[in-house]
Image 1 (tube, rainbow over the protein chains, first blue to last red):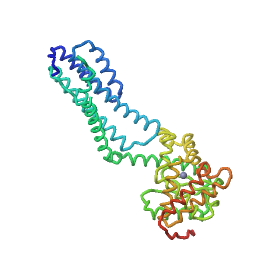
Image 2: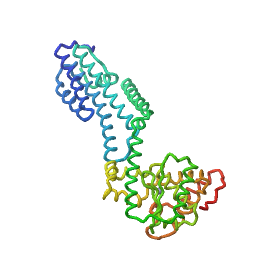
Image 3: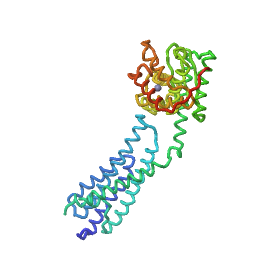
Image 4: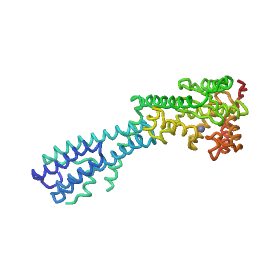
Length: 139
Length: 248
Ligand SMILES: [Zn+2]
């Protein structure tokens, strides 16, 4: 718990930012920028909301941001191989793709879990991202 | 703040560790990607060779063919390269040139065979070109210049294939690939008990002559004397060996 007692509608709103993320991850793997745009729009919409809601939409946003970087690299690499012929399909490339898919999946289930818990008013803190969120979101 | 940095670092490191671990798995082998690439290279190489075959005169000089075949065989056997298929071809052409195509095709012009002073020099050139094949330089070069699209398109023959062919037969590889091939050639020759200094000698001959249309991979290269010197230095480092007298 963060301290404040969130009311029911707040829980739903906070949870929705994770739902937004889940949708974003599903679409965002093929089109990385979707991750960020979707969560960022939601984050903007929640700016005036309570601390609980703001905190959770920020945590969702930050964890999306890291996916954006990893997914973009995967796309850039694919582009290099397909169209520029800079390199062949290598072990490194396949390993990177698998790692990125695994990370996206992990993020997907973590976000799913967060959405359901936060909806019940229970706080979920992601490793590292929650600490980062603390420094960005002030009461 | 320190806690955040620490946790962030752990996160990055664990992602990196997962990636490093995944990299150890031979994915390209499992997915048959290596074979697929070799298959494509073979198709492209065969198509390019057919193009040469239809536009050039294949040499009928049995002695020349015998010399080239014999040198290739000696290098292949003594270096245990039997799992790679090589197709040496001799064509009647006045241009002093030799080049490798993808898929193991090695093309030697008769003018080059006449230009060399010893069979060791010819063996040096052949070993150098074989190195481009074994190190898969041609494919790397093609991929870089034309991308996957043109490479697969080239199998259809026509304009694309001709462009690729001109590119392969006339342009030098970059400096690192050339010296990589030189060093590999020395090893091939040394193992085959052929004096590797032949390659250095031939480069010196080529750098001294100002004939036009000379062997492009040597003459267009700004530092063929330097390459000759590097070859000599490398040979000096090798344990002394009695080379056989090539007399094919
Ligand atoms: Zn070369």
